[in-house]
Length: 246
Image 1 (tube, rainbow, N blue to C red):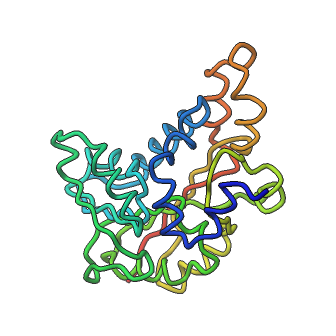
Image 2: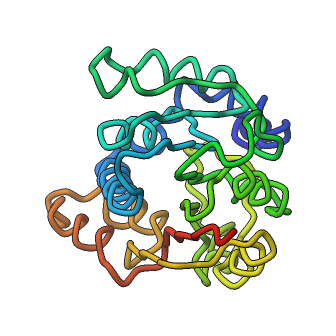
């Protein structure tokens, strides 16, 4: 029998995420390790993205990075091709002053509906792993970025291809995975006049392994230990910052 996860992965990415939008956050961040992972990734994003600028979040999903960056930015544009994801993201946000700085756009990351040089920073997390060719997406991110602005993306760890399929969490209805390493990202960045400037690593173990082996045992593995593992500065996962040179 074909699983529900396999069926949704057979669809185009936009339709896939329209169908799972309502359960996206609970599947990924509803457990102990998922909640800690979310906190760690949001903290890294806040450290990396320069304050008081105009930020574009490409592939915003349910808007977790747009929300965490809103307090330090002049404005945030949260873009996703899934209308359901955008609807859920907008509905979750309280009408606080930071949340009012977020605007929502349905659009394609490979054809951004913005003028060149419109943003001070572009962040895109958990998007490029869904495409085999990242060049059109990086090209558009670089185009809409001002000179000296930041691109921040996540990269695959060197072991991901080896363990990814065997350790996939069956409860997560993720789209197909493509593994883009730092050397590949560096080459594509360079092609579009973007220079890798910083790399922040985290998670000493694969998250799928943490979830399967450590997360279900709170009496043996306290949350404080999970925080040490996922928050480890020398880890397998990474955010990469690039600076647009011209």
